[in-house]
Amino acid sequence: MINELLPELTPKIAAFRRDIHAHPELAFNEKRTAEKVGDYLEGLGLEVHRGIARTGVVAKLSCGGGGGAIGLRADMDALPLKELNTFPHHSTHDGRMHACGHDGHTAMLLGAAEALSRLRDFDGTVYFIFQPAEEHEGGGRVMVEEGLFERFPMDMVFGLHNWPGLPAGSFGVTEGPVMAGTDRFEIEITGHGGHAAMPHQAVDVVLAGSALVQALQSLVSRNTDPLDSAVVSVTRFHAGHADNVLPETALLGGTVRTFNGELQDALEEGVRRICTGIEATYRVGIDLRYERGYPPTVNAAAPCEIAREVAQHVASDGLVYLQLPPSMGAEDFAYMAKVVPACYVWLGNGPGEGGCMLHSPHYDFNDEIIATGIRYWVRLVERALAL
Ligand code: NI
Figure (cartoon, rainbow, N blue to C red):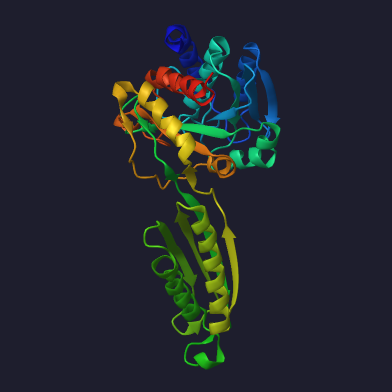
């Protein structure tokens, strides 16, 4: 039983967590972390694959003859942030910090790998996925592009993130969208500059840009189902220097956020369509640079049902939130969830007192939730790959 292993396992995993907290590494440079992770997994006798998406590690554990397979994913990277905590395990690398708890995610998944390899109370294959570069750089996307799911076929994949503000050891399990998709765009409009008194001899980029801003607002208000959530914001509009000169160019920029992949596609298409229309209508040239960020993270029904059931068994005081609103933050687990049915849950990290919030220089992962996290992973595997 997992509960008998935890008194021995938890302090060891907490010590591992504090060690990597003290040695944070940034996106795709998690060399020391990945080496320690790989060595730990090899020490358990698992089949270990290193160097996927540069510093990513995948380990395989099979038990019985079952053909089912699932993946459990943790992230390993830290943030470019100066830690302001002074406790003994504070960062030893100036300007780098585990301010999002990926140290805790990595350590808990290692704890689960050890427990599962000792208990062997399931039937099938579990892949432990340690990904690099969750923050901004899309290490999850690179793993998928490098054939994660072809090399390691799995029926479902699960992710977990600690969540300050939720009671320690509680869970948030939400079916459907949990994290937003975030895109950004920059639009350069080119016309013909001229005298403000003779606009007929110029091509006015200020007028074209104003019409563009207005038209972009129709994407959400007139082109999106009112029951879907989306934001299109133009946040920059730079043009002109003088009261009597019509400028030659205007530069606009902004962001698009959604909780639905199809809507994300439709909004990009809409931004492009409107730019083309404004070009024709106002005789300007438009250069649109539309940059796709992380897609929305969407939890599928079947893995979500399993996660919910398991969370209800292992949560502190049985506290499981099923109706939390999704976060406008983004998460690159989304790239995995686009390919394989997935569920990404929040594990309460306790109150955000003293600035203990994600990406804060005062943040620290709460070691008291390690046992709950390990128990969640172990039970999840035993439930999804039941004997
Ligand atoms: Ni994070």
